[in-house]
Image (tube, rainbow, N blue to C red; front, side, top):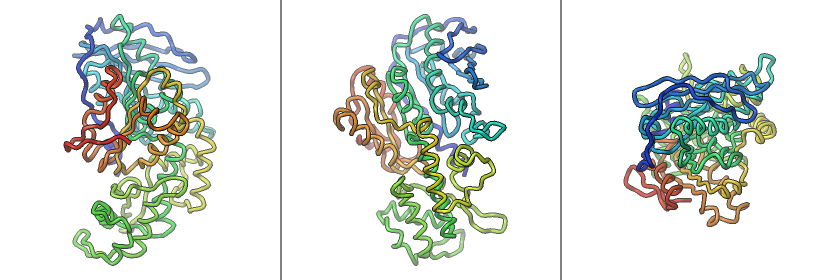
Length: 451
């Protein structure tokens, strides 16, 4: 299960527009860097690669006891643009394929680790030895290191090539999508264009709400097998969205005939409904694998391990107990944890302020697509956020002038299904040529309309 989740939250490489005015790289060597406000530069290293210069700037912040790396790849043939790459899960950045792909496309490309491990499930950094929340590192992960990335990355780019980037972009999915929204909300002048795909906005709520399927199965003491869940998913894809219609249906699972029970249908209904009215459930037609995975123990009994991103948030930041067992959560416990997370962390990592007036004033463009079959982050969060922005910023038409959302039918989390094939190119075209996208082309030849 964890391997599938990891693959789902790593953004795909994107198509790239025609280069801007090219520039030739300078000698690959450490560059003098001025630290962002509140930070100090610990070190700057440079490693020459075949087609780019790899510069790493390490920062620290007063009182944080942190060591934050900002990695900048500077291609030999530069297209004149800067692109920051977001992270996934609890990894604040991408120092691997996503970063090198952007550099290979001619971008000065940068990412940050925010001073935490580049591991999408690791929250060991979240607590201090005395059990208190490590608020400096949480602040890094939530927002501070994003702005540091923009400041340092663009500064290194300017000094390396001898001129500023003509345009600066953010590109991220999942956590990377949330980070893009945080940039638009708190640091509106950092980027000309932000591609924020399947964003994990309202993190303080999302990161608890997605443990709901585990709570349901434990409370109902019923754990449908993946084969049974697949039957409900297949039925939903055929338009059968009332779980009760499958009661009594016989299916073949690994050579054994199983009959769908009323208890199975009840579990599926509650998972699809979600913890209303607080949050949406799993989209009908999306895979149950992820939020509602079930596995067998050594004795062959089925159980629900729970979505690890949600489980680790609850253990580390809400309960402040790495040993806490989320399988013990009752319905009542769930609501208490949900509200505790919202109270403690919305102002830190909620990433759901609907006031984008400063971003609009800066001339920035924000483009989002979200799969309607997203099995990890229900698209409800994105739609609800956009509705809030519409309410506070003059209505749908006015907001469309700088912020557009596209809902992709049949598309899973960040990838899988008829995905948009050139959303980043559409963003660049919007920023640099004023051509706002009306639709996004999908990999199956269809056109994805905007919300």
